[in-house]
Amino acid sequence: MDYVFTILILIGLFVILASSFDLVIGHCGLISIAHPIFYAIGAYISAMLSKQYGLPVPVSILCGGVGALLASALVAVPALRVSGDYLLIASIGFQLGLIELAKHFHEIGGAGGLTNIPSFLIKDFGRESYVVLVLVLAALTVLFIRWLTQGPYGRMMTAMRDDELAFSMLGRNAIWVKVAVFAIGSGIAGIAGGLYAHYFRFLEPDQFGLLQSSAVLTMVVVGGMRTTMGPVIGAIVLQLMPQVITFFNLPPSILGPLQGLLFTGLVLFFMFVRPQGLLPAADLWVGRKQQGDAGQSAKEARS
Amino acid sequence: MSATLEIRGMCKSFGGIVVADSIDLDLMAGRVLGLIGPNGAGKTSLFNLVCGVVKPDAGSVSLDGRSLEALPTYERARMGLARTWQNLRLFPSLSVMDNLMLGPRAYSADSLMDVFFRPSQIRAHEAEARDRALDILERTGLSPIAHSRVQDISFGQQKLVGVARALMNEARCLLLDEPMAGVEGQTYALIQKAVRDIAASGVAICVVEHNVAFIRDLCDEGVFMFAGKVLARGSVEQLINDPHLTELYFGT
Ligand SMILES: Nc1ncnc2c1ncn2[C@@H]1O[C@H](COP(=O)(O)OP(=O)(O)OP(=O)(O)O)[C@@H](O)[C@H]1O
Ligand SMILES: [Mg+2]
Image 1 (cartoon, chains in turn red, yellow):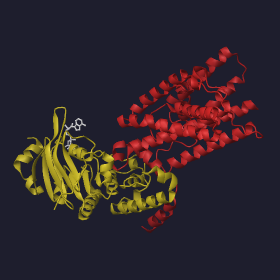
Image 2 (cartoon, protein in one colour; image 1 turned 60 degrees about the horizontal axis):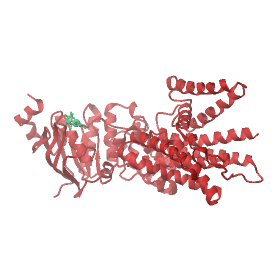
Image 3 (cartoon, helix red, strand yellow; image 1 turned 180 degrees about the vertical axis):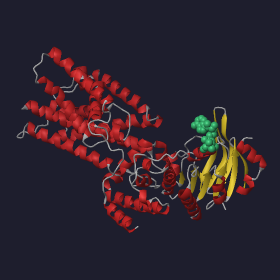
Image 4 (tube, chains in turn orange, brown; image 1 turned 90 degrees about the vertical axis):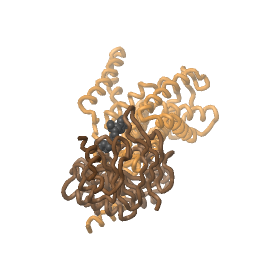
């Protein structure tokens, strides 16, 4: 049973990661693949605050989210003032640099990893309660991102992606929109990081490198960018696939390469055959219905 | 009467090409100024300089007496500067209506605090903008295609959407870059009427146009630009009939 719980929790966490990453790269069009470093920042901050300073776990998880949010703004503000493309380089540099730094920083476990992170299991409820918690938070994240992208803020992101210059000429502040969305997406990743840390109770810097970047990117691409359910489906498929193969009882010498082959094959397949992903995004932005729309249709009916 | 938009000593060159050579120009409230000149004269570049899209080598711009120099493009727009683009620049992923919805100087979701904590204010803002957009769509004859994608409407209608989107700003100064190129028939008359109405409401307008008939019908005055210089200012009739300018214009 523990095995199933662990997989469900990983699915939930990757739904949060993939959805928040889609907000940044899909909806806002910000090219950055450093998403896992904000997951790491949330995880480490939350782990350290609860382990060293005895903060209650929920509080430290929230602090981890805020820390990730602030760290991402720190990267995005100077990078985006230069140009949108610069964010890619700056954020990867930040990701790899920070991982290197963490390896040499013994207070947080160094390269060997941070152990004995306080667990967040409610005594009488056991692991089930944590599974429920993570899945509920994953659902809330998906709903929140849908709400944000289908409202007036989503209209802004869409227009900015289409034509940034025309967008600015209407009086909209493109840099601020980018920094804000980048920070929101990263903050959400930070919270997921905290949830990870207090379940697995072990963190190691190398977990959060380019391999994980490409995993999250693959989830979004395979599922379908700029759709509500795309990142969810991508996260589930890519989380389950390696598990399914393990059932075949193959020797490790075959299993490892087979998993790698499947991943790479999947990415190549989608790049060439179905670049829009499993769920293609609509090419016309349609906001959610608002109360004002009733008045609008009345007015249109009159005219 | 002081000018709505004041351009003083504007200079800009790209490599060796001089696109603005100490240009001084005033746009007056309620008047339509035609900006005439051959291809490459620097007309679009002048708009870009005024909007802060291109940084000048020297010179200044002010709107209603307030200097725009230090302001980025979006803040200039928020002060009441609006323009259209020679190459349209509509948002293809948005409907005609949503293209307009982004146009008000103050947009409903400019503040994230409002997005998260004041939903009623956002709704009020959106409703207000929607009413204004419906009104403008009505006046420009675009109501029937309000919910179409911009790729699905005619080129003339796309031009009109560009003008309509700029009108959402309720600007003090409006710059139109070749609103008539490629436009004919009914749309021609609609754009003409729209520009007249805006001018009548006290907006300072500058129109770049190669269509001489349009300029003559619409503009109170014209300036002739050549190689980054303003060579002449006067009535459109006067400029068109000047043999020297005609020669420069047609490059003979
Ligand atoms: N960003 C830029 N970088 C380099 N050269 C530029 C740039 N923008 C404009 N130019 C050059 O400046 C000159 C003036 O261009 P501009 O677009 O202002 O002319 P125009 O008067 O609007 O002409 P048209 O009637 O063809 O629209 C052209 O030679 C153009 O190639
Ligand atoms: Mg031009």
